[in-house]
Amino acid sequence: MKTVLLSIGLLAGSASVAHAADGTVTFVGSVHSGACSIKPDSVDQTVNLGAIAKHQLEAGGKSEARRVLIELEGCDLSGLTDNTVTTTFTATPSSAVPGAIGTVGGAGNVGIMMTHGSKPIELGVATTPQAISTGNNTLEFGAYVQGAATAPIVPGEFSAVTNFTLAYQ
Image 1 (cartoon, one colour):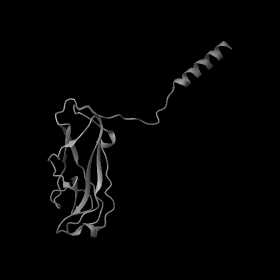
Image 2: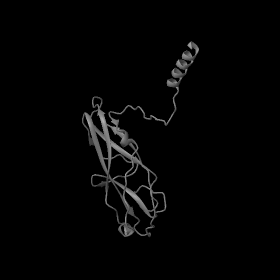
Image 3: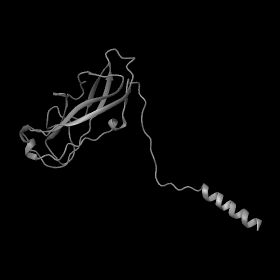
Image 4: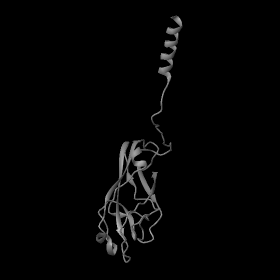
């Protein structure tokens, strides 16, 4: 009887130790020396530019602009002199639309233009400095699709990627 009880006790104890993996959680991030942290949703984001009618882009036409936000948190301005930040966007340029970000996919003769206020953003050139304050801040930009001035617009899906770099002053 003692042997049976001991066996049942050992079996019950080992059952509570057995675990099955139902999935994984991966944590990623980075540490940098900037004045602010960048919220995770702003580090890698997707901006939906919509399903745009071809006729809207013909002869250099453009779509409605959509907001592109970079949210900063935990800003400490103690090491800054001007309490500002500039943003530089880099990407493969469009071969069809001068100054635009190039696209990939089935759509043709279109590019993505970005703006800072009412001014177009030039790829590889820092934007006008934006004032920031201690704590949380939001940097706001715009993006729209522009068609080529003379080439026919080709319907289809598209995507594009731009990287951004922040410089604190």
